[in-house]
Image 1 (tube, one colour):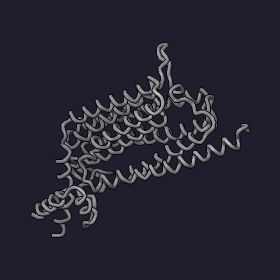
Image 2: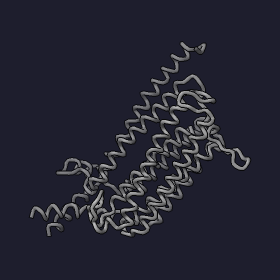
Image 3: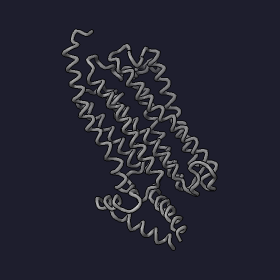
Image 4: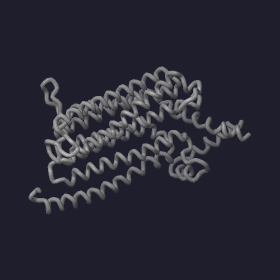
Length: 240
Length: 121
């Protein structure tokens, strides 16, 4: 009975849309984010703070690049690979981009199957996402190795402005760390999904709410954010 | 009574939630495809070595389209309440002010470097 009443109230509240809805939500009792759980709201707020961190990295890169009198190394040439005798510019970064986008695609589908309580497909898709992520990190390790062998250091490089190395290692390193943490997070949650922790309400982290697969979506938010950051790094660092 | 109320509230939330996210898989595949197309386009900008304003405007255009698709569809922002969407999407815009400040700052630094370190120490 009470539940029905409360659900109705919830529905009536969410009926307000547009600017009036924003004002109503923010000035209302108890919570501003009406149909979003605390877990999801906190992940969004964390991602917002992370946006500022990456924003500051990209900004400092912009400042370094704009204020140097020495020409900036041409990323198109620096990240070129020779495959089967063909010299292809920026090819490794392009492949990494496609790998990360594919991982986002499988993650989005995992979230969808999670809400349908299809445990098998959810877990498999999450593991595929993790595999794509691990591939990405592997390719990044290859890229770092190649550049270090060629003499790139945070304080010098053979092609131009010294700041190139510090910007590159800082930005891609921090992003790679995010991907690595995401892969670990994905594997942990996929194991819980596979084992059925969310159906039985097994004791442990994030499993207490029976039949609730929202944690898959929250993990997904983090993963898509990692992809989102790469979109900006790809545009500003590699293509600019 | 109080207990009933406590139980009722968290229940209302996931229920409303599950309803909101039953999109067909096809939607995700279409967005995935578009992200591939847009990424290919931005790669081709570099491959064909476009330069100048054309290059920058294309790069930023493809970047914004990709970011928009990821946030709106993959991260479900398109189906969230506006109260959350604005709380998350508006604050990053202040970064643009920061960009403006740093552009002035780096122009000034560059000018000083050109004037004072002309010979190259």
